Image (cartoon, rainbow, N blue to C red; front, side):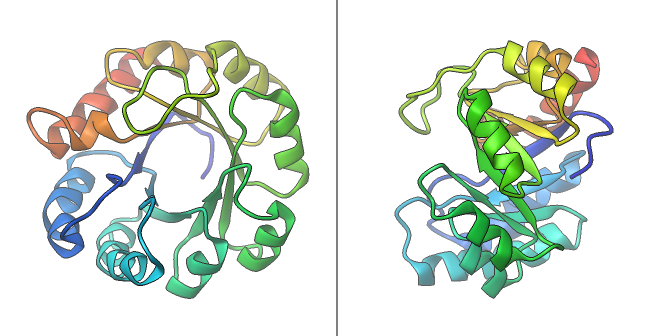
Amino acid sequence: MDRDRCRLYLITPPVLSDPARFAAEDLARALDAGDVAALQIRLKGADDDAIRRATGAILPVAQSRGVAVLMNDRADLAVELGCDGAHLGQEDGHHAEARRLLGPERTLGITCHASRHLAMEAGEAGADYVAFGAFFPTDTKAVRHHATPEILEWWSTMFELPCVAIGGITATNCAPLVRAGADFLAVIGAVWNHPEGPAAGVRAMNAAIAAAA
């Protein structure tokens, strides 16, 4: 996940009732519509077998298109299932142990909320990117930490490690984050809930990123 320009980082819908259909239809259309750097499999509340089934459907679709696939919360499942990395929250296990499990070739991302201290700790633990947010209200989860564009500007000025902005980001509100130095914009609803479908959602996000750059 290099930081040559701001790119789109998709997160799966929180529930996939039919992972095979999602992968073959919505995901394939979204990834074929424009530039997507990464896809995070985030299925909160799903058991391991359900995550395995979903990952089995998603991986070939994403990886065949050059999109990195990251597993939310679970470095062990990321390795077991052949993902390209894992994304961990602050409560998702020991970050240094996750780094060891993933090895040097897989990506480790760490949520840092709105904390400069947590971000620096993540870098010291071996993270390949840090994630800040939430920047805007979101229906996906209760927002306990509110970040501002200033933290992106500070991080991108001070450190080489890429940063991801997350939380309520849409094509209409993302410009300040791009201009502040976000390397990636993580979105869920802006793509999967787009009124014209996921492909239109990706195109809209790509156009907004390009216009803000």
